Length: 393
Ligand code: RM4
Ligand code: MN
Ligand code: MN
Image 1 (cartoon, rainbow, N blue to C red):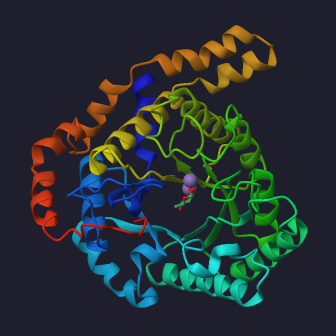
Image 2 (cartoon, rainbow, N blue to C red):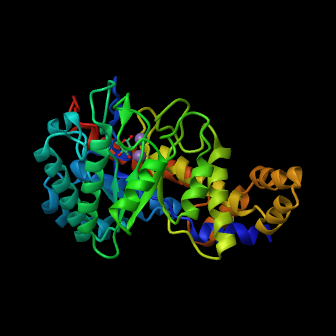
Image 3 (cartoon, helix red, strand yellow):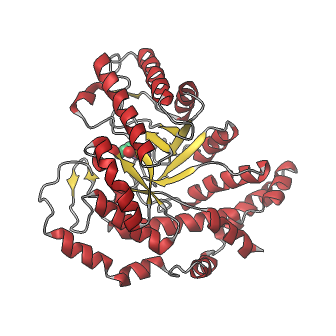
């Protein structure tokens, strides 16, 4: 009974890898360069292909336009070959509206009209790239905001955001989606233009029918109840996807579930409970948004994916019917225990069996360490690594 529920959950659970998670990235204080880090789109697909080959649940790779499509649409031409060669497809397409010098005072919210137009054009170009590489989701994160009180017209910028998002939405194909991410602070510290889920929800609604909210688990204030936000967005039909990571303080981008695995479990539980109640699957893109500065990048991704699978499988063990009954009867201890017992169950043996039944290695991490892949890429990539890397990814 237990096992069947775990197997069903594993059969459907997929999670997207970020291309920037395989590249050399750092903190704002600097980068520690890893000889094995990927620096080309080919290498990023190759590394993601390894993670997918070993885990079987990462068929897509999120791409960042500036870092992965340096020549815009022209760079998209090579993607089909990479898909064939490495066995992973492009996932969400992420425009970059924060690194160019022109974005010093914002992108969609910039008081300068030509800059807003450039930002919109870049977003439309990104939609075009997504179309070319068969990606459904265009995922928007804005660094827009201000550092000091009085320096920005908050309402005016809100209205520019509405206009920009509407115009971007108008460029979508019928099957594409616009995901709107929010973040309470950083790099702007006084106000960010899309600071929380409510603002993202209102802007997504204003943008058009194919816009949804993206929840990055690191983009909340400490102790915020993220699963409640998830439940509300599900009820509103507006939850588009996740950027998973964990944190102690802010947007730390630590390994998913490393600090608070129960939080991730509770998020998955809300989703599965919604699906049980409605009898329909929530159309959610599960994505990882982590770029490890210290951990080995491929190992960190395998670790993340396997933990994500475990937490999802545990959440699938919650008996929804019994929970609904306990909630209605206000049997608090019984209701809470249903979550706690599921969370405490060791699902790893069943997951190992599931992997073997799919022809996958029972232990993806051990298989990776034995494969010799890391040694091969370390040798082949080390020599041509620039000593000084300045771009984020
Ligand atoms: C942001 C946010 C975005 C990511 C950038 C690089 O904090 O999480 O999703 O693309 O970082
Ligand atoms: Mn994110
Ligand atoms: Mn972030």
